[in-house]
Image (cartoon, rainbow, N blue to C red; front, side, top):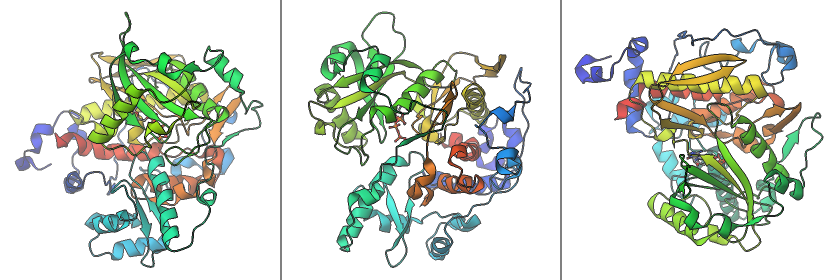
Length: 495
Ligand SMILES: Nc1ncnc2c1ncn2[C@@H]1O[C@H](COP(=O)(O)OP(=O)(O)OP(=O)(O)O)[C@@H](O)[C@H]1O
């Protein structure tokens, strides 16, 4: 580390572990190019840190279908090409890689390892196809034939939807209009394994699960008088997220509402609305994981019906004015629209918006993530499958330690002032009472053609490694781990 550059003020005891890494100084270029992450030679020292109380028992893999293993795949995954420890193998699309590299204005680092990262020029050019500048761009070769999708890192689903819309308008322009259905397929079908007999849930059973006989009136159930300091804090392809302080005594936590339209015939945010059966796994997973440290804490699930309440519409507009929304205006919903509302504890800001105080703090946050996943996997064979940094929330805490229970053993990690929560189980896989819930992502061709961030190379690599075995498609964890090596070195220096 170059002391003369003033970097020494960032050093703490943990920083010593990161030295010497001369190439990391070069990475500071990324600070100037916000959002593009290149994962240049993160070359990853394999530091071994133990956690108090952890003596992993050898688990019986023969009963687990959660983690692909020797028996399933005929090879040892720890020696696979994906391991950041062993080697990085970034393969993109052969034909486009060359073109990207040939671009004179390509960022110097994009040539490394064949990573498909568009240059700024390319992004600008591609953006013209989208009416939402910089939210998404479609990658095309010089003859304008679409060969892949350039997506923003993090939440990819909305980018993909916008791409699909864009693609339609491009096809329209060239008089090659295909029916919308051929581009926008129902990608959210739930594929349950043979063990699960109950892959359809009736409306009545769903209400019962919510402790309701029928849907509540949206306006009455979430009237503005019950909610203080309400504001919209986020959005996803499936819904809007509002934060508020409940107007009732004894309620210490701020809550968030994740409001998801269901069962309607109109498309919302470029997606078909889910039905009760399709949203069922997310509800079950959220409820099951709620009691585990590190997963979102759920207070209640309810089903409501009616027009979007005016006070939410106003907050939606404010968010749109201030930050710009990628979602459709909620005024589009009619009287008969149904919504599922998840009430969750507020869990902080997502990692892409967090700046760590120092590398030690980020290291301990990473430990929390690892332990959360370990407990989820051990207890429910849980795989997140979409673990990008937008799905990791970070909140400050005054607790000195965070406690996990792994296989009846208490594991205690220093908090270093932060508490992490993993959210968004839309694509997750879980096994509860021998029923396995998961989405078949292997049919999601567009996702596996995406580029724009190392995140999407990881998706391809995971699919290749797992030989298209959709049950085992557990991508993203590696991505987060690699991304973390950047955060440790860069993000906290941005202060
Ligand atoms: N418990 C929570 N506490 C604080 N913020 C939250 C919480 N849950 C969700 N959010 C915010 O709302 C955003 C959207 O939530 P979420 O990812 O669950 O939606 P989604 O519709 O499933 O997204 P996707 O488009 O990835 O499928 C998150 O990125 C986060 O900023």
